[in-house]
Image (cartoon, rainbow over the protein chains, first blue to last red):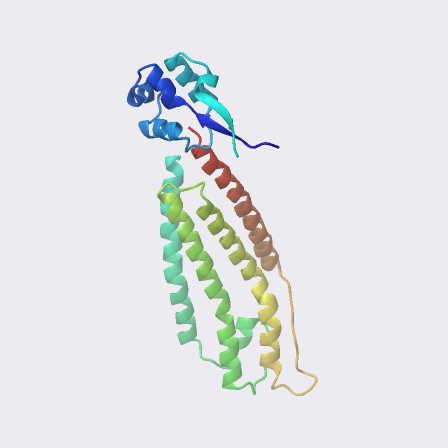
Length: 72
Length: 176
């Protein structure tokens, strides 16, 4: 089976929406540090309610934030 | 974490430390106040047929063996103190706490099993000076031993379950 890795594209979406991490953190109700971890992909997972809040704030779909890429 | 756990952990930590101080003092007091004679040893090892001719070396060995149980008890109490220390500062669902709980269980189990080993050794030592036919080896199981063994087993299993819970909690913490 091919290995697939989930890549977080939050930084791209933040740039597209011209939103700062601090503002997103405030709107979602999580720490800036967690947003930073999310952007760098250093988290094991994201809760559905966090994902829903981010989608609501950035006016996007989960697929805009997460991408499955093949791993060599 | 509920404030109650921290409060009770602080109280129990204090009590545990108090017992850890008092227990060795009580043992030392008993050793000093009780002359080491063949007449006094039977009460300590539950053997009525201690030889009057038992040597001082035998008496000392039996007394020294009797100190193993309080030593295990102090070690177990110290593990309990470490656990209450962790709880007091708010660390509850951690792998370290789970491992301490397991060690407390091993302590209880050791407290149950150690008399099974010591009693035969002590009975042989203390009756060795008796004439042939009056020497004895004794082994007994009482309700205290069963209670400590079952409690120890239970605590070990709870500790193992807590390790799984701590792992799940750690994974949960790594979710945003």
